[in-house]
Length: 265
Image (cartoon, rainbow, N blue to C red; front, side):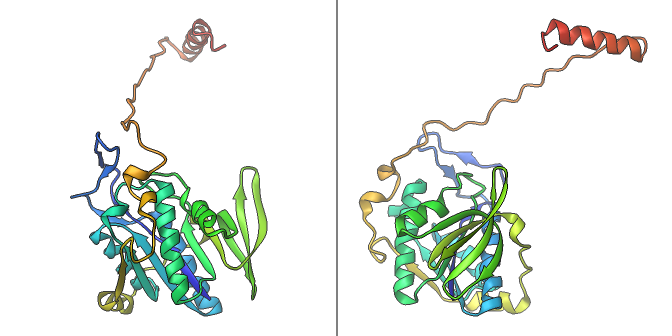
């Protein structure tokens, strides 16, 4: 099998600043790491490789420093790593990002046919949960989101269990397909010493928008169909009432009166 995991470098801390003009996160100077949800996608890709054989590729879209998450991926068991880096990608929303990733995946597929694409359910910087399903739409592949377990890998399909609003369901998807996984699916491994050494020597293949044949009219903040109108940290107002009383019975009676006056009861 050829399995591709999609990962992203995101802020390591939730204490990030937002550019008021663009609505984008200010990433310069902020500590970054692999998006926590993508760690489960990568782990599942490597686990499946170990179980059924094959190779794992990893793709990311981001600035030069995003190369760090690709080397981290090699340390965790990835075989090939690809980075989409171009100012044309800057400020892309999920529609533009998924388009760019789909073009990158098409190029990877031209090198080595892809059987399975795995994404984390969402990122910790935007929490949209769009990328996996949108990639499947661009590539016209079947998709399953919120996957909590791989039940069986067959020669031409994969059976998975996915979470639903009222429980879970088991579905079978033909290859090639796209999965978005939740953290319940596995426990990411610790990087081995051998893996760290391989990561330092790993070759990172870097592509621009032209390299992947992307339409630049579908990339970047100027071409996004959605935009951030306003970003802000909500104010948290604490309102409390102290219930007085000489003893428990009197306090209980006073509490009931307060609730009645407020028309809660």
